[in-house]
Image (tube, rainbow, N blue to C red; front, side, top):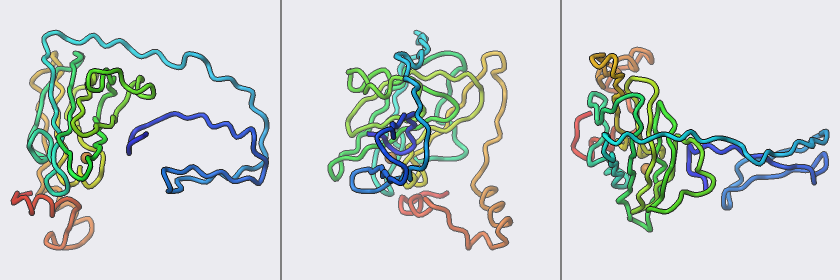
Length: 233
Ligand SMILES: [Cu+2]
């Protein structure tokens, strides 16, 4: 299975088809994409046995395991018990040092829900699922990994660039509803760099001006979620 935003590189062999044939890729019963076969030349390329060397990140023994808890459904989605706040840094870590992150989902409602956990600014390595080896198709570097209910997925995280980055569930209703957090990656050579974090009022004002409407008439996905939770956005 591939969850939303997960990337896969796939080679499809259309060699058994004829020009004029149509081939449709389905996800369960839903057609995703239709290929219309036209004239084509044979391609005798063979796929190499070994595709990619996964870099061996050495985990820094000084960095403890960082836990991330994805919780809730609908309006109540959160990371580590908090909804996203544009002006809050949720975690800091040094640039250039690898750390193990343990991502879990406490969500078991309606048979459970998978959260595709995504990180900006880096590519991580999946090292285990509930203590077992990851799926064969997730042994390369990734930026999104599926988290099943009550599962603990351990990943090795290493940032090579300083800055402020997001980590979040990649289901759009969940990220809009606040299942997002921010990490500040600190370059040990320049630990005092300050970042200006955008505030919601400035953002909404700019949107309103761009669209030529009053701020009261603006609506952004996710705002209702914050309101229903009794939070100011
Ligand atoms: Cu989610």
